[in-house]
Image (cartoon, rainbow, N blue to C red; front, top):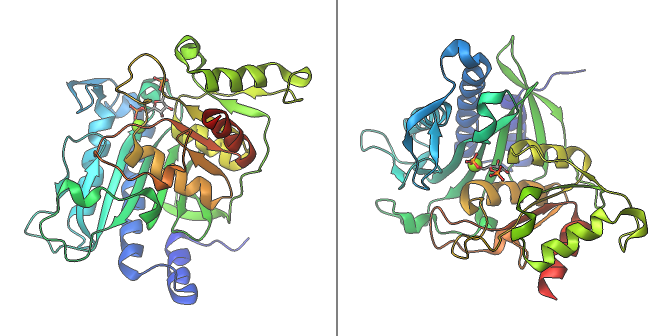
Length: 333
Ligand code: AHM
Ligand code: MG
């Protein structure tokens, strides 16, 4: 098999298909390099003294793990000086991070969840980095939070790295989804799956079922119907898979279909779900749509939502198209 590296793939996309501007290519390469560094730290585990909890909380009041903070720093440092960015925003930081004056300012804005799946960090279960790229608004001065308030459909690239038995990078620039595997000996990303496609139908679902008693009726109805199996209204048996790392759950769905749900529930009406629109839902929704799947907040297409807050939360329903459409329909009825 001829090996195609990430660099080669991006150069070819830029040169032959004109789908990736040079600056964006640089940006993606820098993010991918940072993910390599994070992968290395994750892989060391206790030997690198990176496991465990830090003495800090993030803006959402969640206790931070040492690796959350380290991954955030790796991404910030890697992306600050290249000249391709105007600002960054992270799930782990309260406000945006403009590029310091000593560096040139570029035309893109980068958002990330540096290490998703925090509860799995210390137990050697797959975790990942999720990122999203927006364009800075025309004529933007000093970047503000308002400049980030763009619908997910405006993303020019999105991706994630999953740190599992293999480290992989899944990437879209709006022209399909490709997957690269990290060759750990060579230190390079190698293209291993082109044009990933999510099957329209599935018999697999992912939801944190410990919240069943808090769900709203459309979710209860849908899950009950799936649990009823062959003799129920959906006429087939379903299997349940829940890793509690969104990256790993989405990666499974990209490879063999499925539906992933993190609904809003009755616990806290001011907090619609757990996942964040700009760092988790939007980038994953772009990837899923580019692979032929669907993603909604239960009522509308995820990528059409115009954010009002940087750390806004949303309910998430994504994956195999026909299943996402079904559960969305139940919400609309
Ligand atoms: P995190 O960004 O703090 O790691 O939270 C996001 C993660 C997702 O990866 C996962 O789907 C979800 O939290 C699981 O949460 P819970 O176990 O609380 O239901
Ligand atoms: Mg997260």
